[in-house]
Image (cartoon, rainbow over all chains, first blue to last red; front, side, top):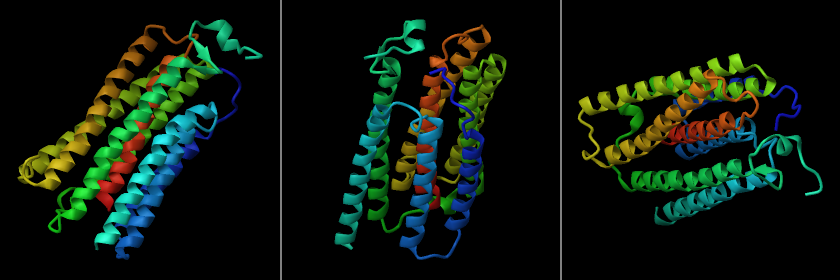
Length: 92
Length: 197
């Protein structure tokens, strides 16, 4: 673990997260179509979550099995959300 | 295993297939935590869209204040990851102060959230007032409890670091960091779902 790993982009990731947060707040205030706004905001949140998991939680550098452990429930969450949205579309 | 790493010779930490078993265990725990928060979040979305008279959080709460709090938590993630990185690079003194900064930022986050809660209660929104209140306090409350546990964990790691710990093995800092970043990650999702959408 204490092997050479060069300079990791921790600060750049932080700047990215801060900028994305500012963009989110700006997008939330725009008079966009509801579905489009939600889609953009969830997309931005997903990018931020991925940045934290890949760089700060080291999934990009660590053993792949750890990414599988973390990724599997995440996949279940996505399936759950798709079912929830499908249910909403069918009912409306 | 055809080869062993330096870490295996050096430490007593059990290693399986190149992964420290404690780290493996933390990831399994985090996987269960993902499902825990997923259940709460899906319940929130489901309840919210079934209520036509839903109160929008953005109308009741100060979004700029929460955005600032989000920024504080993200900032605490960078201090945490730099604390681990500094320990890895052998700069233990820097690592100690970064750990301390992480814990303090966590406390600031909780204080702002406490202020927000009391503000909301003064406006007459209790957990039992309506579905918004119930789901809002449940989601932010469980997350806040995770931050509080994280603060205690990081403070104990900080105390050990100031007493000269982690000179050889930085696994303790890494494990606390994994939990801390996970709690930050959950907040990124909650901030979007509760306050922005």
